[in-house]
Length: 483
Image 1 (cartoon, rainbow, N blue to C red):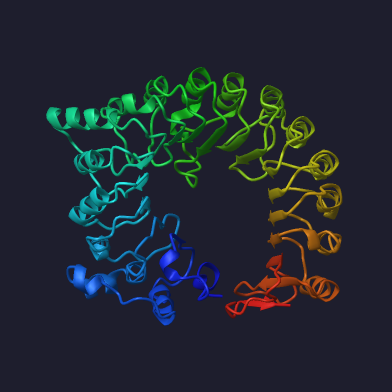
Image 2: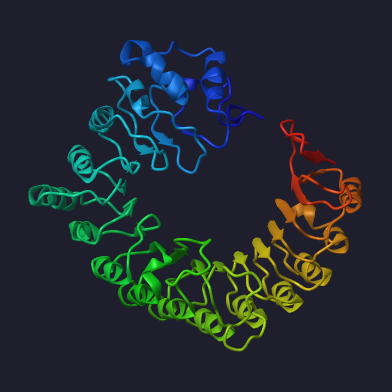
């Protein structure tokens, strides 16, 4: 199904469209389908500079220029072939309706003059997230034209500034009284972080996932963030940085700690159970966590959930598969047992480390509000998955990879799958015959098997089971077998 089949209908006047979210699809398809719907003539040629060249480089804009009252353009987290940054020139000078613009993940240099004019025209703009090509000096110029912003994503935060440029940046940031969410800060230098201090007073969301800050730099920044509710950081902050979180962020509700280099096994820095425990002591409102670490203990997790019993999302990723409690060498079963026993509001759980079927017995017995479960390199037998399917009445999404669960586990959920959104299993012990039997017994489900190169035709390498009133999808590649 083409993306515009979902977001646009001929019975809805295109002039009323205010938002478009672009997911994974060929961008060249968008302007073709908009044109086929028979809407007003494109104005790019009248208003753009070298318009056809821009359209060739960034065909998405050809369709967007048809929308006179577009309010939100967000193209983050998409795999885009970015061949040039002049696409902003396609918006006509009469276009003033944009309220949110996010191109943070594009890689090319942007036509800054066009961006500056666009931001200056759109007086209702509340969200602006630029890519790393935007310098600090350019950021300051944009903010002069948009002091009303509520969410800001900066570009690179590492260029050399003169003393005068730094003062102008600090003053301009200080005049932005409405900003409550800050992100970007690519390659941030501690030298320029003080320019943000006056801005931090009202921040509720600080995303530092592109800023490899050290613990001292984070600690100084957080002393100016008394209202913070959400914080994303890299593990370069180490446990000392997380201790600063516990000391300075009593209102924190969400914490995400990402690995700066997940594939470097010899890495020295990182976070451990000590940092997590420190956060839990100082942030009693914490209810959402995504935590990448290289070691953990059962006792630490039990302490964390005792300090923060209202977790709704608990996603712990111990990056070495099958890692036990590094102090006792025991499986991590009791850690996740403590999570599901203590956190009665739990909706999403990601488990990791050395886990036996006991973990899944705990989940099936206690996680009665669980909706999403992610499992990797865990379990002992089919019994583990069977406990989850039988014991979690609200389960909607189950993601499993590299586990010993096989045919009996898959087929034990025949009645459960009707009420679930999806099941994903990869590198498990499931066969093609079991998948065929599932498809036969449950004809209203879509059962897809993705074949790997060199597959023997007996094992089902990747299985995706989901509900859809539209039936099997029509765009499956040859490597996907729909049963």
